[in-house]
Amino acid sequence: MISNQFIKDFSTKYQTSELNVRREYIQHLFLSYFYRHPKSSKIYFKGGTALRIIYRSPRFSEDLDFSLSEVTIDQIEDIVIDTIREIEREGIKIDIKESKKTTGGYLAIISFSLQGQKIDIKLEISQRKEKNIGEIITIINDYIPPYNMTAITKELLVAGKIHALLERQKARDFYDLYYFLRANLISVNEKNILPKVLALLSNNNIQFNKELKIFLPKSHWGIIKDFKKILAQEIRWVI
Image 1 (spheres, helix red, strand yellow):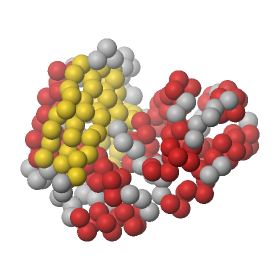
Image 2 (cartoon, rainbow, N blue to C red; image 1 turned 90 degrees about the vertical axis):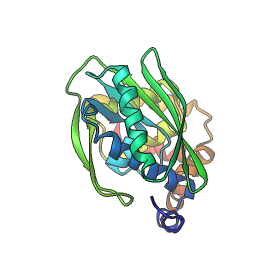
Image 3 (cartoon, one colour; image 1 turned 120 degrees about the vertical axis):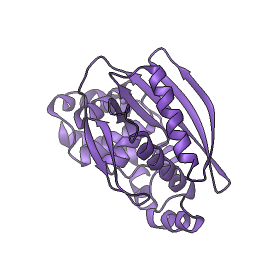
């Protein structure tokens, strides 16, 4: 288990809050044990946290999202419980606040106690009909030794995030699009959707600075002061 000094040092290094560092450590720890389980190979990591952990987005993220194709929900619960048992061996107290099947898959809210600080992480797992939607990726990070995971393909990750933007139009979704544009991760087909995104952005009153500040390093705060204008410029350059 990491020390308080480690958390303080990395909070300074990453120019972010200690909460973000604690949470990200827990995320890596959970994923490393989760993907050691023999039945987890057909469960594919995705979402905003995948964008940070795999593709190095500057934005810290809260939840762990997955898709599955050949694993039952009952098996998912067993994998989660086995993962929690392994993490508890690290000296971290864990409480499962919620664990249930949903219409689209599985949902759990798990509370981790790290040096007296409680961190809640939501797990959402959705079912897909397609098979072979992912790839094995080695995760090298600053918290724990490298580990392997099965993640959704880059193309499906980007498509899923853009779909989420169109559906819910949250600040983090617009920021993730900005990152896709800057990292040249947008496909030709997805570029066709950008005029619609630009219209949604123009008609939106999201307080980007307030909502994104807690998840971005201080060195990125200048971008979100006038984020609507900056993102609009990025979109217009592409379309």
